[in-house]
Length: 249
Ligand SMILES: Nc1nc2c(c(=O)[nH]1)N[C@H]1C(S)=C(S)[C@@H](COP(=O)(O)O)O[C@H]1N2
Ligand SMILES: [Mo]
Image (cartoon, rainbow, N blue to C red; front, side):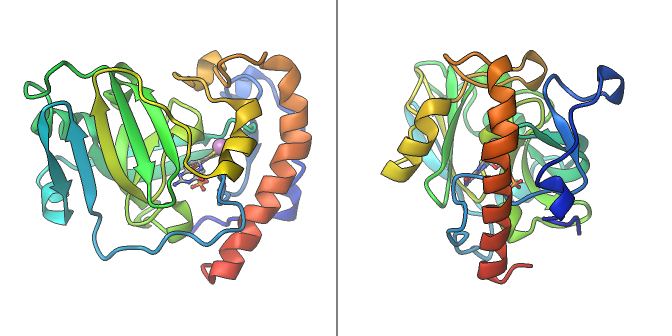
Protein backbone atom coordinates (compact mmCIF):
# COMPACT_ATOMS: atom_id res chain seq x y z
CA UNK A 1 0.00 0.00 0.00
CA UNK A 2 1.30 3.46 -0.84
CA UNK A 3 2.42 5.49 2.15
CA UNK A 4 0.25 8.40 3.32
CA UNK A 5 3.07 10.47 4.74
CA UNK A 6 6.76 11.15 4.52
CA UNK A 7 8.28 14.18 6.21
CA UNK A 8 10.03 15.21 2.98
CA UNK A 9 6.69 15.53 1.19
CA UNK A 10 5.59 18.30 3.57
CA UNK A 11 7.87 20.76 1.80
CA UNK A 12 8.61 19.09 -1.54
CA UNK A 13 11.23 20.32 -3.93
CA UNK A 14 10.42 23.03 -6.42
CA UNK A 15 8.53 22.08 -9.54
CA UNK A 16 10.58 20.58 -12.33
CA UNK A 17 10.23 21.19 -16.04
CA UNK A 18 7.61 19.84 -18.43
CA UNK A 19 10.07 17.07 -19.33
CA UNK A 20 8.83 15.32 -16.20
CA UNK A 21 5.35 15.14 -17.71
CA UNK A 22 3.86 17.12 -14.84
CA UNK A 23 1.08 19.65 -15.52
CA UNK A 24 1.87 23.34 -14.88
CA UNK A 25 2.57 24.17 -11.25
CA UNK A 26 2.47 20.57 -9.97
CA UNK A 27 5.11 18.89 -7.81
CA UNK A 28 5.58 15.17 -7.47
CA UNK A 29 5.17 13.44 -4.10
CA UNK A 30 6.45 9.99 -3.22
CA UNK A 31 3.32 9.44 -1.08
CA UNK A 32 -0.44 9.45 -1.77
CA UNK A 33 -1.80 11.66 1.04
CA UNK A 34 -5.13 11.52 2.81
CA UNK A 35 -6.36 14.92 1.79
CA UNK A 36 -9.44 17.09 1.73
CA UNK A 37 -11.66 19.33 3.76
CA UNK A 38 -12.14 16.69 6.46
CA UNK A 39 -8.63 17.38 7.79
CA UNK A 40 -8.50 15.60 11.11
CA UNK A 41 -12.18 14.61 11.30
CA UNK A 42 -13.03 10.93 11.26
CA UNK A 43 -13.67 9.31 7.92
CA UNK A 44 -17.32 8.40 7.39
CA UNK A 45 -18.27 4.82 8.37
CA UNK A 46 -17.66 2.36 5.55
CA UNK A 47 -20.76 0.40 4.51
CA UNK A 48 -20.35 -3.31 3.60
CA UNK A 49 -21.10 -2.64 -0.02
CA UNK A 50 -21.17 0.54 -2.06
CA UNK A 51 -24.73 1.87 -2.04
CA UNK A 52 -24.79 4.80 -4.40
CA UNK A 53 -28.03 6.57 -5.17
CA UNK A 54 -28.37 7.75 -8.75
CA UNK A 55 -30.91 10.47 -9.51
CA UNK A 56 -31.85 12.48 -12.58
CA UNK A 57 -34.59 14.68 -13.99
CA UNK A 58 -37.84 12.64 -14.20
CA UNK A 59 -35.98 9.42 -13.35
CA UNK A 60 -36.93 7.22 -10.41
CA UNK A 61 -33.88 7.09 -8.11
CA UNK A 62 -31.75 3.99 -8.67
CA UNK A 63 -29.72 2.38 -5.86
CA UNK A 64 -26.44 1.11 -7.28
CA UNK A 65 -25.38 -1.81 -5.10
CA UNK A 66 -22.50 -4.27 -5.52
CA UNK A 67 -24.50 -6.36 -8.04
CA UNK A 68 -25.48 -3.36 -10.15
CA UNK A 69 -21.85 -2.23 -10.24
CA UNK A 70 -20.65 -5.76 -11.04
CA UNK A 71 -22.94 -5.84 -14.08
CA UNK A 72 -21.02 -2.98 -15.70
CA UNK A 73 -17.70 -3.46 -17.57
CA UNK A 74 -14.61 -3.40 -15.31
CA UNK A 75 -11.98 -0.86 -16.23
CA UNK A 76 -8.27 -0.56 -15.33
CA UNK A 77 -6.73 2.89 -15.32
CA UNK A 78 -3.18 3.97 -14.52
CA UNK A 79 -3.07 7.70 -13.95
CA UNK A 80 -1.43 10.50 -11.99
CA UNK A 81 -3.58 12.17 -9.32
CA UNK A 82 -3.34 15.94 -9.04
CA UNK A 83 -4.50 18.10 -6.12
CA UNK A 84 -5.25 21.77 -6.65
CA UNK A 85 -2.86 22.55 -3.78
CA UNK A 86 -0.09 21.55 -6.16
CA UNK A 87 0.91 17.95 -5.45
CA UNK A 88 0.81 15.00 -7.79
CA UNK A 89 0.85 11.31 -6.88
CA UNK A 90 2.09 9.41 -9.90
CA UNK A 91 1.05 6.17 -11.56
CA UNK A 92 -1.82 5.14 -9.35
CA UNK A 93 -3.56 1.99 -10.56
CA UNK A 94 -7.33 2.29 -10.25
CA UNK A 95 -10.05 -0.23 -10.98
CA UNK A 96 -13.77 0.28 -11.17
CA UNK A 97 -16.52 1.09 -13.64
CA UNK A 98 -16.90 4.10 -15.88
CA UNK A 99 -19.34 6.81 -14.83
CA UNK A 100 -20.27 6.88 -18.53
CA UNK A 101 -21.53 3.32 -18.31
CA UNK A 102 -23.63 4.20 -15.26
CA UNK A 103 -25.06 7.14 -17.20
CA UNK A 104 -25.78 5.11 -20.32
CA UNK A 105 -27.37 2.24 -18.40
CA UNK A 106 -29.53 4.21 -15.98
CA UNK A 107 -29.97 7.76 -17.21
CA UNK A 108 -29.38 8.43 -20.92
CA UNK A 109 -32.53 8.51 -23.02
CA UNK A 110 -34.73 8.68 -19.89
CA UNK A 111 -33.73 12.02 -18.42
CA UNK A 112 -36.13 14.84 -19.24
CA UNK A 113 -35.03 17.58 -19.67
CA UNK A 114 -31.62 16.48 -20.92
CA UNK A 115 -28.71 16.34 -18.50
CA UNK A 116 -26.02 19.06 -18.54
CA UNK A 117 -24.27 18.66 -15.14
CA UNK A 118 -23.42 15.98 -12.63
CA UNK A 119 -23.10 16.43 -8.88
CA UNK A 120 -21.35 13.85 -6.72
CA UNK A 121 -21.72 13.72 -2.95
CA UNK A 122 -19.69 11.88 -0.32
CA UNK A 123 -20.83 10.42 3.00
CA UNK A 124 -19.14 13.36 4.73
CA UNK A 125 -21.28 15.84 2.74
CA UNK A 126 -18.43 16.86 0.41
CA UNK A 127 -19.70 17.68 -3.08
CA UNK A 128 -18.38 18.39 -6.52
CA UNK A 129 -20.09 19.45 -9.73
CA UNK A 130 -18.92 18.36 -13.18
CA UNK A 131 -20.02 19.27 -16.67
CA UNK A 132 -21.68 16.23 -18.22
CA UNK A 133 -19.07 16.34 -20.97
CA UNK A 134 -16.24 16.04 -18.43
CA UNK A 135 -18.06 13.40 -16.40
CA UNK A 136 -18.45 11.11 -19.41
CA UNK A 137 -14.72 11.04 -20.25
CA UNK A 138 -12.88 7.72 -20.48
CA UNK A 139 -10.88 8.42 -17.33
CA UNK A 140 -13.80 9.06 -14.98
CA UNK A 141 -14.47 6.01 -12.81
CA UNK A 142 -16.40 4.87 -9.81
CA UNK A 143 -13.24 3.34 -8.35
CA UNK A 144 -13.32 0.56 -5.76
CA UNK A 145 -9.73 -0.71 -6.02
CA UNK A 146 -6.37 1.06 -5.78
CA UNK A 147 -3.00 -0.52 -6.58
CA UNK A 148 -4.48 -4.02 -6.57
CA UNK A 149 -6.32 -3.84 -3.24
CA UNK A 150 -9.76 -2.70 -2.10
CA UNK A 151 -9.86 1.08 -1.81
CA UNK A 152 -8.61 2.04 1.68
CA UNK A 153 -10.90 4.08 3.91
CA UNK A 154 -8.63 7.13 3.86
CA UNK A 155 -8.91 7.21 0.07
CA UNK A 156 -12.69 6.88 0.07
CA UNK A 157 -13.80 3.27 0.64
CA UNK A 158 -15.79 1.47 -0.50
CA UNK A 159 -16.09 3.49 -3.71
CA UNK A 160 -15.05 6.94 -4.88
CA UNK A 161 -15.34 9.05 -7.95
CA UNK A 162 -12.03 9.34 -9.81
CA UNK A 163 -11.62 11.92 -12.55
CA UNK A 164 -7.96 11.73 -13.47
CA UNK A 165 -7.77 14.79 -15.76
CA UNK A 166 -9.35 17.13 -13.23
CA UNK A 167 -8.03 18.41 -9.90
CA UNK A 168 -8.62 16.06 -7.00
CA UNK A 169 -11.52 18.03 -5.53
CA UNK A 170 -13.77 16.59 -8.25
CA UNK A 171 -12.92 13.04 -7.16
CA UNK A 172 -15.41 12.69 -4.31
CA UNK A 173 -14.44 10.01 -1.78
CA UNK A 174 -16.89 7.65 -0.02
CA UNK A 175 -19.44 8.32 -2.69
CA UNK A 176 -23.09 8.06 -1.65
CA UNK A 177 -24.95 9.91 -4.41
CA UNK A 178 -24.60 10.84 -8.05
CA UNK A 179 -27.14 13.35 -9.30
CA UNK A 180 -27.66 14.13 -12.96
CA UNK A 181 -28.99 17.67 -13.41
CA UNK A 182 -30.54 19.67 -16.25
CA UNK A 183 -28.89 22.88 -14.99
CA UNK A 184 -25.86 23.75 -12.89
CA UNK A 185 -26.42 22.87 -9.20
CA UNK A 186 -24.53 24.38 -6.25
CA UNK A 187 -21.39 22.67 -5.03
CA UNK A 188 -21.36 24.36 -1.63
CA UNK A 189 -20.85 21.85 1.14
CA UNK A 190 -23.43 22.08 3.90
CA UNK A 191 -21.04 22.80 6.76
CA UNK A 192 -20.09 26.39 7.47
CA UNK A 193 -16.45 25.51 8.23
CA UNK A 194 -16.11 24.12 4.75
CA UNK A 195 -17.82 27.14 3.24
CA UNK A 196 -15.34 29.34 5.04
CA UNK A 197 -12.37 27.26 3.96
CA UNK A 198 -13.46 26.92 0.38
CA UNK A 199 -14.66 30.44 -0.23
CA UNK A 200 -11.31 31.95 -1.22
CA UNK A 201 -10.64 28.96 -3.44
CA UNK A 202 -14.07 28.64 -5.07
CA UNK A 203 -13.46 25.70 -7.36
CA UNK A 204 -13.38 25.93 -11.13
CA UNK A 205 -16.28 24.16 -12.83
CA UNK A 206 -14.03 22.29 -15.23
CA UNK A 207 -10.82 22.07 -13.17
CA UNK A 208 -8.81 20.56 -16.03
CA UNK A 209 -5.32 20.07 -14.69
CA UNK A 210 -3.51 20.66 -17.98
CA UNK A 211 -5.36 23.98 -18.38
CA UNK A 212 -4.55 24.90 -14.77
CA UNK A 213 -8.22 25.67 -14.08
CA UNK A 214 -7.92 25.97 -10.31
CA UNK A 215 -10.46 28.66 -9.47
CA UNK A 216 -13.37 30.44 -11.01
CA UNK A 217 -12.03 33.92 -10.27
CA UNK A 218 -8.61 34.01 -8.69
CA UNK A 219 -5.48 34.13 -10.84
CA UNK A 220 -3.58 30.86 -10.68
CA UNK A 221 0.09 31.72 -11.06
CA UNK A 222 0.49 33.89 -7.92
CA UNK A 223 -1.40 31.35 -5.82
CA UNK A 224 0.94 28.48 -6.45
CA UNK A 225 3.43 29.52 -3.81
CA UNK A 226 1.07 30.14 -0.86
CA UNK A 227 -0.79 26.97 -1.78
CA UNK A 228 2.26 24.90 -1.78
CA UNK A 229 4.13 26.47 1.10
CA UNK A 230 1.21 27.15 3.47
CA UNK A 231 -1.97 25.27 2.56
CA UNK A 232 -0.26 22.04 1.58
CA UNK A 233 1.95 21.51 4.66
CA UNK A 234 -1.00 22.11 6.99
CA UNK A 235 -3.44 19.90 5.06
CA UNK A 236 -0.82 17.20 4.55
CA UNK A 237 0.08 16.87 8.22
CA UNK A 238 -3.49 17.25 9.54
CA UNK A 239 -4.83 14.74 7.02
CA UNK A 240 -2.24 12.21 8.10
CA UNK A 241 -2.87 12.80 11.81
CA UNK A 242 -6.57 12.25 11.08
CA UNK A 243 -5.80 8.87 9.51
CA UNK A 244 -3.72 7.93 12.56
CA UNK A 245 -6.50 8.98 14.90
CA UNK A 246 -9.00 6.97 12.88
CA UNK A 247 -6.69 4.00 13.38
CA UNK A 248 -6.29 3.45 9.64
CA UNK A 249 -2.49 3.66 9.50
N1 LIG B 1 -15.75 12.92 0.47
C1 LIG B 1 -14.67 13.70 0.22
N2 LIG B 1 -14.07 13.59 -0.97
C2 LIG B 1 -13.00 14.35 -1.27
C3 LIG B 1 -12.50 15.30 -0.35
C4 LIG B 1 -13.15 15.41 0.91
O1 LIG B 1 -12.77 16.21 1.79
N3 LIG B 1 -14.23 14.59 1.16
N4 LIG B 1 -11.39 16.07 -0.68
C5 LIG B 1 -11.04 16.19 -2.11
C6 LIG B 1 -9.70 16.69 -2.36
S1 LIG B 1 -9.44 18.36 -2.17
C7 LIG B 1 -8.70 15.88 -2.83
S2 LIG B 1 -7.18 16.49 -3.31
C8 LIG B 1 -8.89 14.41 -2.94
C9 LIG B 1 -7.85 13.71 -2.09
O2 LIG B 1 -7.96 12.32 -2.22
P1 LIG B 1 -7.08 11.41 -1.28
O3 LIG B 1 -7.43 11.73 0.14
O4 LIG B 1 -7.40 10.01 -1.68
O5 LIG B 1 -5.65 11.78 -1.56
O6 LIG B 1 -10.16 13.99 -2.49
C10 LIG B 1 -11.21 14.86 -2.84
N5 LIG B 1 -12.44 14.19 -2.47
MO1 LIG C 1 -7.36 18.76 -3.25
